Amino acid sequence: MQIAAVKTDNGYNIEAAIPWRDLGVTPQGGLLLGIALNVNDNDTPNTAVQEVMKSHVASRIFSDPSSWGTLTLR
Image 1 (cartoon, helix red, strand yellow):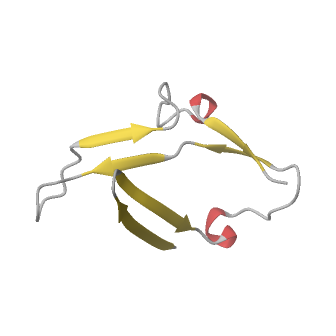
Image 2 (image 1 turned 180 degrees about the horizontal axis):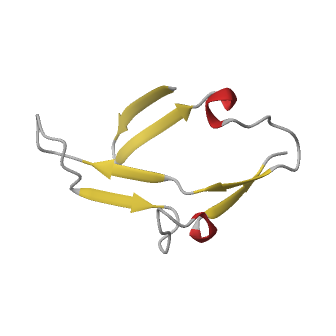
Image 3 (image 1 turned 90 degrees about the vertical axis):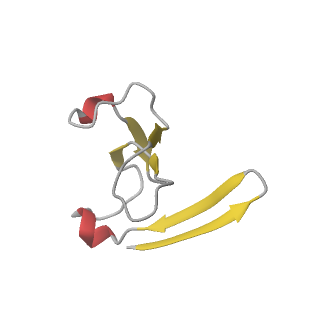
């Protein structure tokens, strides 16, 4: 996985690349994937405490993929 983040005037731009083989998926047009994009924040150095978590699906339940959004490959 590769991750890059750049601080902007009003937040961050974040990019992530996950190899398809790590997801166990062969990409093809029309493939539907369940997805929930989440960002965690921790402003306390040297701790592993999640202080804030935002998701693009407000009603998502981590253990219930049917509550996630849908990504359709083109």
